[in-house]
Length: 315
Image 1 (cartoon, one colour):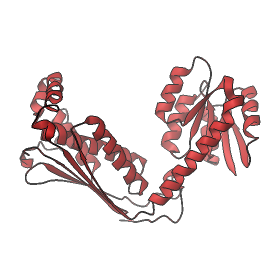
Image 2: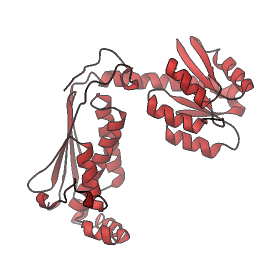
Image 3: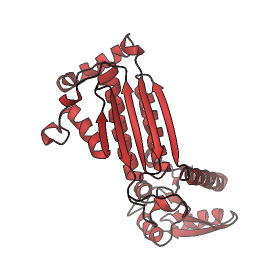
Image 4: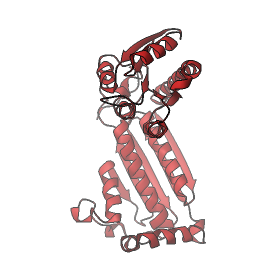
């Protein structure tokens, strides 16, 4: 049976929403009077979906979305928006809400929206169940010096790493940061041959020069080569560029606190902090990043609610 948690400080609105959603087959409706009450109830029983008002005392709808996104990433949240709350609704959607329904159209759209979101959530869970049974995968990309493409590749790689169970949600984000830094380095410092000293001295001039070179040969003809090797125990990323390379031994020490405030030192520090191994080739135009699976995720973790027979590996 599907459990829907309705969160609203108005008793009248709770009854209205509960009446509408109770008409859906095989559904049990539970209620919370505000965001704080909702989190207490979710600790006792995790629902399949949360339908919440935005404007509430204690923890409001936006804050509730942010907490649920972190603590219960697999639970979708639908917002009920009143007139005048559009800005907050947009922020909540960006924070992780799955959809929204204006309160003035609840009769027409709420049940349909809930069913759509539930179906999408089931498909996501089914996809994750399948991915947790994938034991090996290799992927290769060749992309231009385009920051939008870089971000898309980063998102794709970190999602696969998480889906295969190598990392939890927090490490998924850290892996994304490390990949973003490494691929940005391949583009700006490798292919476009930009010097970090320019960025430290004149931030605007650095990016203006990057834009110019991205559209002029020979820099515009160069590519970024990204390889991802995934197993249930670890992931390995190789990021190579067409630039002339550099002497890896001349890189600033990422563990030296004095390098923390330098733009180049910051990127290296993040890469080394978030990955288990970082290696440069002798030419200096390729970096290899390795992230190993941690101990098995606890059974009561939201990340482990997908299935009990998924493959596990302990180090």
